[in-house]
Image (tube, rainbow, N blue to C red; front, top):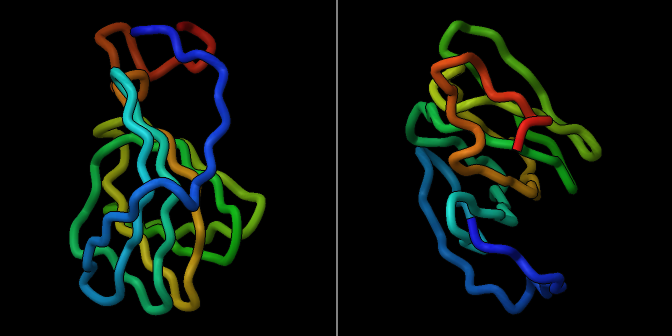
Length: 124
């Protein structure tokens, strides 16, 4: 991976891409780097994902609330100040938000499961 020099991000200047869900819309502002990306994501009121996601993520809730349903039936609610972490292929999940939510999401190759075991966040 190439070095990332110190810089600040004015998220309001990052282009927005919109993705329709089963209902509502997700608005992504994305910084793409070699091997990972950082996204500021807003789910509209009534947003519901239109697919089961099997990608790994580090998700931090900046504002609002969302619910993630796992394919095994478990349900988790994330609200302001909370986060979750999941590796690629570890837990299929689908998210929705009744009143809207703003999330900071980091994902990339470092979240993939390795032959020697699940992702170790302290080994870079």
